[in-house]
Image (cartoon, rainbow, N blue to C red):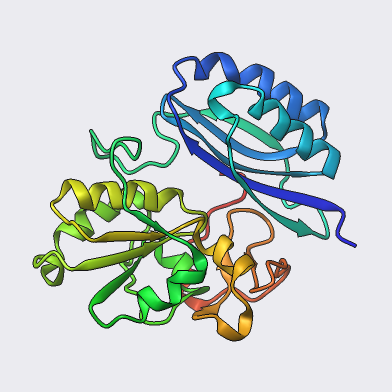
Length: 257
């Protein structure tokens, strides 16, 4: 029986007082024995936490007690041991850094596609499938036929997008990322650039792996996660001690970053 609950969460919502939220949230996490990383910004909250079942549930309940976060969604996984070394609650300008002014998923965003409908969408030959994650994440695994932008950070994605001649005809585009948050901004960017048919995988890869049986899956490989588990398999089980793909060696971010 796994003894550590891992919860990944995010929500785009105005948090004008996000600076005041930091200390009470950090104190509760520490008191609850919870570790991980949470980002707070004026545009919302993002992060992953891990700990005992009671500890993680208490933090989630604390967040949802705020009326602005009462519908906060999260995704769960189990781990044999704690995947984080410490607890951080950091203040940021963006909860996911795209670096383009005026891109707001609360104003416009691509069409969310449930995991059960994703296979049909990306199997359509008229749909271009884009992996919005970084190059080292792609090296661990991706969907069949997905385009790899070969970025080292999400902030490079806008420049890559604008350099793609194949996208100038404004085709149907399906995008995906680990938990869904990067696609919120990536699809908002495409809409701002004049694309009309833009879709993204609801809840990201982690939601797909949870909802779609392995024998029906179009996912190949493992899914990189930003903690000491390194990656998870199709059953969302941690791949502790797995060998690092050649393309990812030397560039993986530290769990402490």
